[in-house]
Length: 57
Length: 262
Image 1 (cartoon, each protein chain N blue to C red):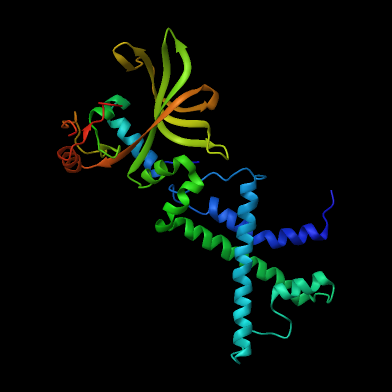
Image 2: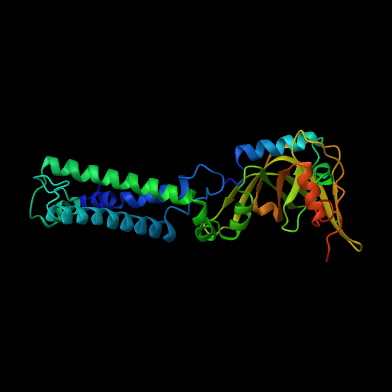
């Protein structure tokens, strides 16, 4: 079964390309929400090292 | 190989059930609900086809019943000289009480085609209805239902960390990539994975904790097929494209760096 649509796959490729083909770099500019979803900058948008606050406990 | 008339008749009667089955597993064009059908000879397939056929025939018989009521009420919406009720025609033929005329045979087959088409279209429409997904998602996807639901929006994609059984001096080889395809058994066990844009990493359990490091030197693998026998475990990540403002808002609400536990 397929989970990612063609649009999603293209988005993933674009994101990876903008981060020099490194998933590590993708994660460095991303943050993880409490529900587990990782927010990554849209391709073409400025991105850098994510300055996230530690999650409150 | 010879087919008996009873088998052919049974296949005809099951046609709406097969159409409902096709609508269930192949009707959706969206990525959200496109489950793998169970094995053709499985009890689940047989049950789905049978229930689909019964429901479709019940709906068809109800329409003929309403037509009869309307006829009795004098509306005469749709009644011809030949019995238009395909069930009456079929049962009469099965009892041998009357031979079917050419018109009745045509009417019978046309009725089955229309009924099958209606079953396919209605089930495919139901599959696409967002409201109903939560109820049948677990049935179709099993443990993957939550992941499939989370990955549904077009601005999201799913990646997978796959730890393989390739080991060297206590370090295991793993791959990270975009999840292209997932093959499941009827019991929803993973049999194989297809990843794209893969990078390699190694993972090692040390006294200080779990150490994961990307392997340098290799280019990104465009597509990588991994079989179940090579898989130790899998972790999934759902990514969502976001504007900088959304990311800042998430940080303000307590989102943590994605590198912290990835």
